[in-house]
Image 1 (cartoon, rainbow, N blue to C red):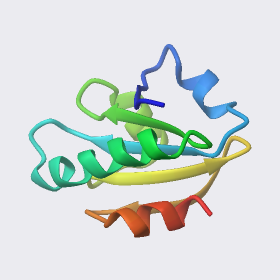
Image 2 (image 1 turned 90 degrees about the vertical axis):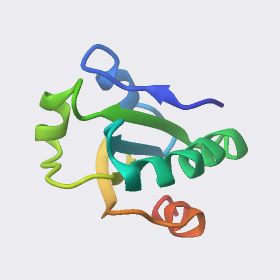
Image 3 (image 1 turned 30 degrees about the vertical axis):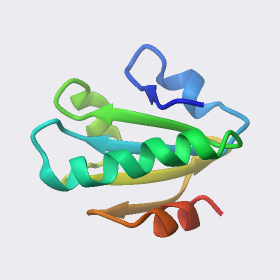
Length: 101
């Protein structure tokens, strides 16, 4: 599966997914975000059991506020519509995958 661009219009369907969800809150101008982005892409391609989405905080400030995003990148793992794990700052691929377990 490829990464889904998450916005206000499709957010509800993403959160209600039966699969565990990984959300990457990012901005185009953010250096650490650009380091994490290819890892998130790889996770999406290699792990069809997860729904992986990216949320641009500049384009979706309401979603960023709903998750109290104060620093990016911020990764959020969700199961059954609830946040089960989150991490702020750049993380390695293994650390990101561990959040989804």
